[in-house]
Structures are given as C-alpha cells and as structure tokens.
Image 1 (cartoon, rainbow, N blue to C red):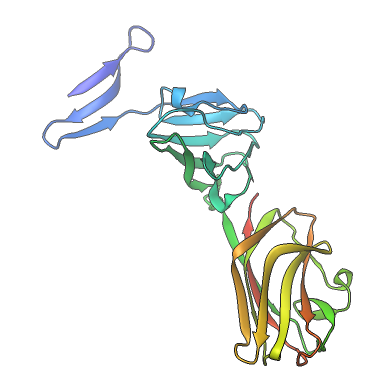
Image 2 (cartoon, rainbow, N blue to C red):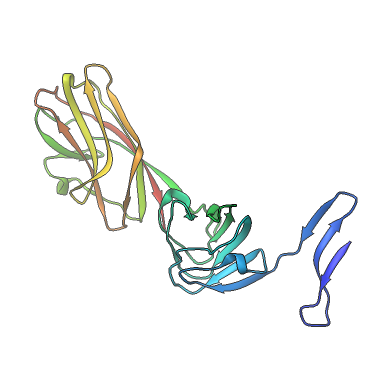
Length: 253
C-alpha cells in the first residue's frame, strides 16, 4: 500500500509505503535546506534529512520531542556543546567542515545529542591520536621542577614544549617510572599549556606503586597552543629518569 503526494499539484511521488504482509513502513525522506542560526529548528523540518547552509554559530537545534534527523553541513559552522541540550562528541565545541554529516536525536525531555558523524571523506568526526614517549635519561632530582616531552627534559617548558598542531583535547594521562619516590615522597605530573597548568594531572607517591593516571580530567588546546608535562619532585624523593608517558589527543576540527 502506498501514500502518494503531489508537490507540484500534478505529478505523484511516493511518500509512504506500507508492507502489509510484514507490517513495516518505509518513509520516503527528502533533504531540505535550513540556514544556520543561533537556533536551527530541526523539529520544524518536514523531512528527515537537512542540509544546513550559512556560517552562523549554532547554539541549539530547537524544541520538540523524540525526533531523529540526518544533518549535512554545506559550510564551516561552529556548534556549541551543551552538556544537557546539545551534546556533542568529545563534550566540546565543534567546527564543521564542508560535507560533514551528523545523525542527531532528540529525546523525550527535549535534549539533542549527536549520535554519529563523519567527514565527507568518511573519517570519523572525533579522531583519537595516541601520544606516547619517554622523557629520556636526564634525572629529576629531589626538590626540583622539570618539564619534559619525548626524549627531552629541561628546567624550562620553553626548551621542550611541542605544538598541538590541531585544535583538540588531551585526556587520559598515564605515567610510569622505573622506580618509586620513596616513603612519604611524591612525583607530581601536570600537563601544561603554554606555561600554564591544566586540569590533567596525576601523582606517584610513596614506596609502593610506580605509576599513576588521570582518566577523568581533560584539556582543550588550540592549534597554535604548545604542550609539555611538568614534573615536581618532593624534597626527599628519589631521583627519577626515563619517565614513560601517554595521552590521548582527540582532534576537534
């Protein structure tokens, strides 16, 4: 059984097909254009596929309940993450590229979430790049502060820092040392962004474990930002060399 529409007043097109034997419904979905704005009311779209034109930043996909839309972007547009009403991959603002596509859903409380997405070339919207390394053989002695990246350890962050290169977010800091700080001593590790501490930090302490991690906090970097890891050794800590470290870098552009 078919339900047909007459968009031009004379030529019929299939709008809905119902398979009575299987009890299924096939909705024919057109793509319509909507201009970008602070609020793009996807719920008002009479089609399941929407192409968003323009470059105005988007703060909301509008009101409604229990909807699904496939959205394509014709321009670079910044979507502003909201932890309740517009939940984006990675929990951060996202600037689209030409041809980006997203499957977005609206729940019964009126909150939108991006469920899936990909770039025009098929890459995932959120690409995770592992960053790993070893600080090298130079020693961190008791009571000192040092800065390191892979193979470099110095007294100043400006001597070792590395450019992020892309807008993204660091998370999941893990460090492993050959030894332990010693009883009542510690080594504290903090990711820095241009000489400033970020929330991403962890501490190896005592004479037991030789590793630590921060799997909760994260830090967003602009493409031009530079990172290094700061290590602080307590006054009586054992010397520290060859620090193994790893982070996840989520590309957000």
